[in-house]
Image: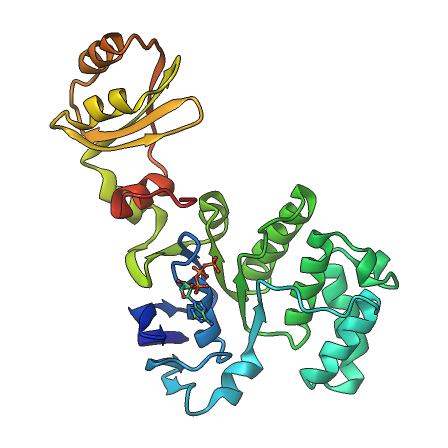
Length: 310
Ligand SMILES: Nc1ncnc2c1ncn2[C@@H]1O[C@H](COP(=O)(O)OP(=O)(O)OP(=O)(O)O)[C@@H](O)[C@H]1O
């Protein structure tokens, strides 16, 4: 359905997106996961034909959208990170305005506005001014606006950042329903691993403008099949202790957590004895030790040496 070919964007000599090749099949829900600055927004702006690539192409059903952006605009709805709404207008009036901009036919616009308000759970509050809404409710109006022209493809740029849990759950549920029940193709960008795990069948992991891995959750986790992840709680941590642990030859990564450290090491390494000795020599107590089932977060850490929120 959609395919990017060596898609790139350079800002003042710096590559924000570097030759990425991704595709979306009809009806899929695909995640674009990466930390701040990885290039996710730039990528989806180019896919949505809001931003011109420096090089490469975006194809819709085999045809370049760069030469002909009108086609993709018809079938794609985009929910940007910034909330672009008129505060002095009601939710309904905002949607009416966007519907006219998107050239939704007059005879269906009323019904579409009611349908999309229903999808995002704001039907009862449509007459209220947007300026009285919480950040999460505003984001829901934004999603409703992107759905007005009944797009086949919905692209969302970190739609749950900085909003209340109730709106967050609502948004996740709306996106899930659109994909599973309406068959809408979804491209969902986030730096929240659990959202992508929950919503997306396939994931691209981005870092520094490049796709560093892709596949289903199971495929991505298999990257870690040669490793164990261990969570260790400590009475305190010290740089010296972390240095000692890092120096053990079978250690791949040590990452500080709120309660201690997380270690990725070669599978089957006999680490406990070494850990206890290192902690004792620093007069630090080891209060808990637990093998973890690896998550996509660990895959990210393994691939980039950083956590998603670094
Ligand atoms: N208009 C611009 N001019 C110059 N540099 C830019 C511009 N937009 C983005 N960048 C840079 O490009 C890189 C990728 O940014 P982008 O916003 O695409 O990342 P992101 O993964 O979406 O992160 P975030 O979640 O913070 O938006 C960053 O280094 C950013 O500073």
